Image 1 (cartoon, rainbow, N blue to C red):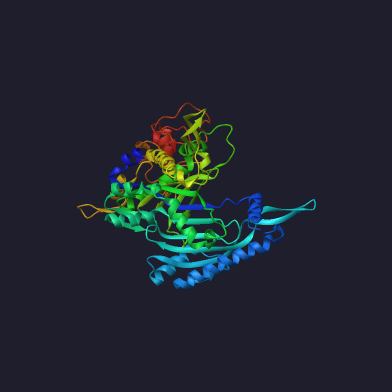
Image 2: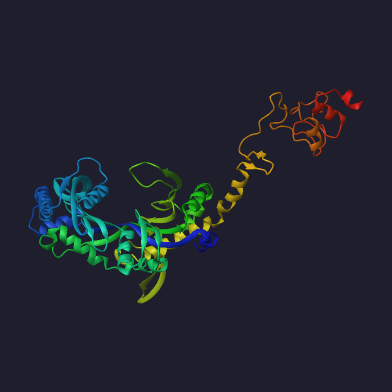
Length: 497
């Protein structure tokens, strides 16, 4: 990243690395069929009554959601069709001017993992299965986290999901510190103190996430206080996005540089480069896909217009796109942390030994994510440092591409190198050349009223190398009488005389 910033430092305001979209998933120790069968036995429920038991607990959670929404005066809405839930919740929060607390509760059917009773050889047992069941989406405006949602599955094993955005968390911390900023969507396009913002952003993994997430779990799942007691949720991070934003001073600087970056990263970054960005080596034992694709988003009503390129290796990827016209974002998305290797301490033979092992997804190991992702983003930006910025040459090009007036009131046409030269109406193209004749100035002056010539019938098909004044389609030199006659459109005898 230092190479990229050093090359374009004159047009860059600063760089900020921060967590972006985050998903924390919580699970209870009742994930297998055997664990569920043991739970039913402890609670005195026969396995034949499994479905009735599951429906009864789902009804309790649904009733709790409706009562909770009614007590807060917030809407409880069932969504029967596909809807952008976050956008709808944000509109409700803005409409009702909610600064903190519950915004709304959405209910919809989704396929999830649950349990069913199966039979085999006249014996019944509980097994894991997938089926549609009711999902509850609680949307809150948190004082520290901003707009978040907590998703609860109403059927056993009551899996939970908490979504938040690291930029929302950072914005509230900056307000508390008094750091001024300008934020568009989930990107900071202006910061009064970039260094202080980066120091605050680095504190994100040190938050007591077990306590924060557990508080919301107990709030929306009343079964934790009675039926599921003393079980608690185990929280993991999947997926996580960690972004590095390069803040440009002017929109024109990034607008001119972006097409070149897009072309270079799409055409010249191969599988070996993508793997090296993610801290891996492309070896023969690799089993997976390395895919690069780019897209331009200009659909109204969705995300802000922009262009992005994504490099995917298995289920982890690194992508680059622009935000609000002045922010260049490089983002590493970690879905499978096991694909990354980190330095860990393991106890072997009674001694603690440092070894390289797979990165774990538990929330207690969240501090590893910025370490790995920041290095991936930095390697990607350094690889783009070889792309030149075309902006410094634009003023000079504008002077040549604009019409000028001389002191004698003579107007000079602008230079247009992209437009082909218009041939004379009476000209004929050379049959052996795809471009007009490029003879010497002597030959050109002789045929100022003519056009590119056709090769003479007496011209040999093979001859030594042409002189600098020869035509691209034949071997007649501009200094010979025959060539001058051919260029002027007269007979050779007239020139000789």
